[in-house]
Structures are given as structure tokens and as C-alpha cells.
Image (cartoon, rainbow, N blue to C red; front, side):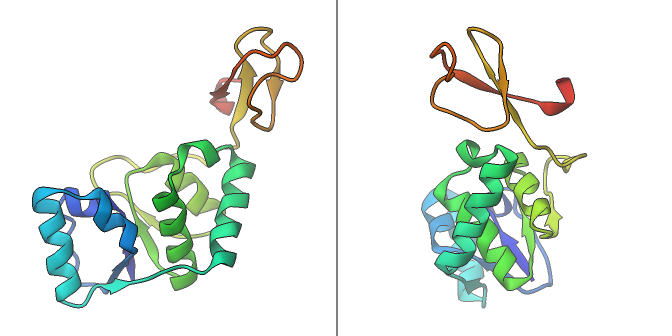
Amino acid sequence: MYVLDSSAFINEFHTEERTATIPLVREELEDESAYRFDAMEGSGMYIHIPDDGAIERVRRVASDTGDADELSKTDIRLIAAAFELDGTLVTDDYAMQNVAEQLEVDVKVIAQEGIQEQRDWKFQCQGCGREFDENHDRCPICGTDLARKNPSNV
């Protein structure tokens, strides 16, 4: 089963496989992509609401990988739905792909290249330059904002 992100509807993803999504995806769509959602729902696309336990598990993994601030409420619930349904997540979103792969959820990309590696992001202070494994609102040393840093550039 394919679990569809909004990019699947925007980029006219087609499959003969069973499909699913979550209600929040419909809210992100406009114009023709919204009509595609409605048509697929009318022809049997499953609308899934993930349970709180799966959502919390996705949040924990996203926090561990450093992707939590990059994921929307919709993104987190889509990953949770794919996890619960043992489905393949269809998305072009890099942070979603990274978290999904940490959860061993298969991912299919549409218009972009898929991720080449899983990442556990680092966070670097924009003032003093110190690096941290976890994100904070501000640097605990000097109080300056932190920025997410690609760990392969460390």
C-alpha cells in the first residue's frame, strides 16, 4: 500500500496499488491537486488516522535525527500512518524520508532524487561555533541561536 503525501497529488502520482493518506493532506491541496485527492478518495483511497502511540514514536525518532523542527503536523502523521499500515511512504520531502527510513518505512520519491544517506543532524551555535547533538532554542553557552548542520560537513 502506498501512503501519499501532498506531493503525490501535486505531481500526479499514478499507481495500480492500493493507496492511503490522512485527512490533513487534503487541507494542503488546492485546485487540480485537490480534485485528484477527491477523485482518488471516491475510487477507494483509504483515509487513515494514526493512533497517538505511532505519532509519538515518529516524534521521538524525528527528535533523535534532528528533523523534528523540519516536520509539520501533517508530515508526522503521514509517517505514522505509513508505519502503522506497513506501507510505502510516497513523498519528496527529505526530512520525512530520513525519519521514515529510521523507522524502516519504505519510501518512494516522485519528482526528486531520494535520500542518499540517513542523517543525525548536528546543531551549531551561530555565535560561539560550538556544536550540539540536540537542538535548543538558544546556545546554552552564549545564548545565540543554533542552526541545523549537515553531519557530513562536520
